[in-house]
Image (cartoon, one colour):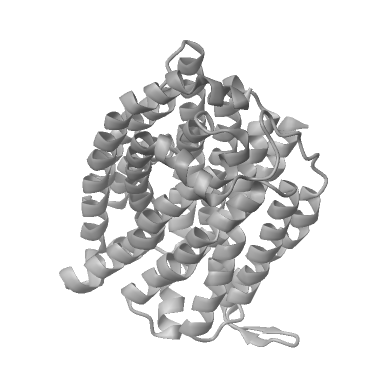
Length: 430
């Protein structure tokens, strides 16, 4: 049942990323039909989706510590799938902005509840691999979204405007949203077939928020540096995810199908293996007694992203750019399962959902809230041409990676102290 849960939760994560990536491939027709600037397009992913995805994580994380978690996950899937379909019915910037808010609220339920479920399905010695597989599914979803989404867009574009009963004429980009949103409405009921696992360690009603604040302060130094490091990783990641399709379209004049195929293959190959390798290496070091393994692997694994991710957008040829994006993607996805693992290992059971939600709040305010918007604003206001998005991406990748590296390395000693001195609390995960 444990790996069945991983499979269903991972499939849900794949669904959520299909929607996130699809909109980035649709930048040209959406900007043309709705007359959007780069800054406005960035706002759809940062302000509309990102802020509400971030803010709703806290109450949903607290709910995950007291309610049936599979119900939370199923409801969230149904909600973000419905609003993905509604994204395809919008005809103005305001309507699409509102639909993206709904998608963000629905997706906010998934990660805190999933982390909490997995930590009760698996012991600490196997948790890194389980969360690694779950996290890997985000990159599977990204790869599938690029490959399938690009092919879907090309096919729908060839068909032209589609006459849908009741809805009337639907543009190809609108039809793409509708088709991508429907499968999630089928998946949501399947989540209810999961067995809700018994909570490990101390359970009961979640403590008052004042006690939560005390628990956070006790871990303050480690959490502050951990959150700061992963915030920079997230900022670079989301900026790249949103604007890399635009980079290939504007600089190399590629079509969505071309971008989807080749960049999608990179994510399927290097993104998934990076996340799996990170979880595997973390478990291996943890078994040898390395207390700071999650942060140590994340810090050293990510540092190369600044080099390869900074150079890739500057390449004169798309093949050279893809060759550099490959190692950048492997190193960029490697840290993602490690943040969740690190937090679970220093957090008592009844606080795990809320601590995971706090983590999501911080990294997404910085990463998702600022990353796509920053890249769009740099292109609009610092540079002069749409193709200059390549320089925006290069700057963000090259600067974010070394900052993340320093933060995570600085956190190591504080994290080791927590693992050593708070052994009694850490045992609540056993």
